[in-house]
Length: 172
Image 1 (cartoon, one colour):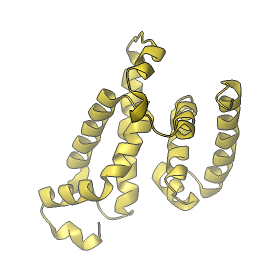
Image 2 (tube, helix red, strand yellow):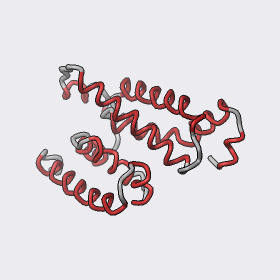
Image 3 (cartoon, helix red, strand yellow):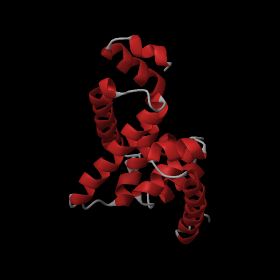
């Protein structure tokens, strides 16, 4: 959304942001909820609430894209931490079998998402931004780390993902 868009009222700004960045927000929610539709909807709603709460505090010191990513990623990580505190016993096989085959995305993409799920929170954030075609400078701004650290971490994450996929027999 262009900077002049901030002359709109709060509701108009909010709708404009959601219209422009809905796919990005949904992608973040998908990664942090393992694609589970109900949890994805809950997280999406939490992100929207946090965007609404924060919209008046946006000062334009960073791009709206960077601001939005920070809100979405921080909400997702916070959501994960709350979930980790709860004891959950879930049969993962049963969860995956609930969805029909025609609704499954490309198998290789699903394999990648499954491997990403095994990364820690910060690595998930970095690889998500990388896969979303953010450059190193943008990733550094969004996450508050140095550009050189981004490059190093991306390389390490790629190795981790390769090993996760290899060791989980996904590559067969």
